[in-house]
Image (cartoon, rainbow, N blue to C red; front, top):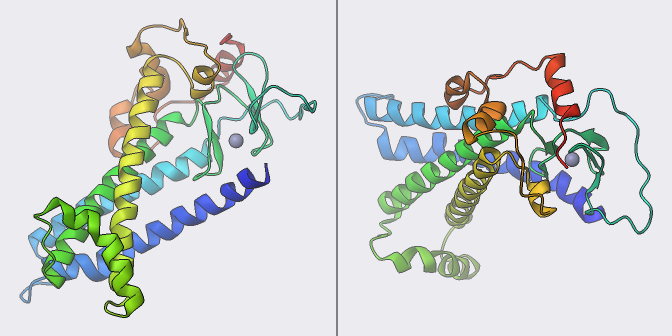
Length: 276
Ligand SMILES: [Zn+2]
């Protein structure tokens, strides 16, 4: 449990640091070097890249904030269940009735809990699942876009050719060796590390997002899948997606805004619905 609590504190710090580093590298290094011309500070190509990058980053950060602002906790339940030493539940959550869980990290009763997200430090349930999925999509876009610009920067600035696929695979071990031998600067080594960070987070976020969309379409949560509860007779995949993404889902694809009105009726619907 101590490890999970530490992860809950370290993961958001890692997210903020990586976001700040990405922002600084783009606006102070990549974009001025690659696209700034002598004639104009903000040419059309530069403007296009700034717009695309800001769009990705603002949507990622906006949906990250929405995931935290719209928690999936139960509004009426503040009772902390006491676990027996031989509690068969998972380490981080205690299963209650009707799809509700008590998250031991959030210390709250969560409605239709999917999993605890360490990057946001919050549980993901039916209320914030749509923001979490959009956060994953835009994080993936930001990282993969950053990877492309980072590779372009290294090619232009340091004449590193990435035509051979082995170049990327050998870049990190070679750079590590060169850095400790004093052949390359700390900034160059940091750039190489960020390429791998962007590739890793970009691919993991994309994979995670696909998994969550499939689960939502089946009307299922990750918790239910782990418990082997495969059937959720809620409706068709369209109605399952509409339940999570709301009627104004198109708006939610491009802006981090609330796309479903949470009314008291919705609360009762989540609480009374039998999932088990
Ligand atoms: Zn939680």
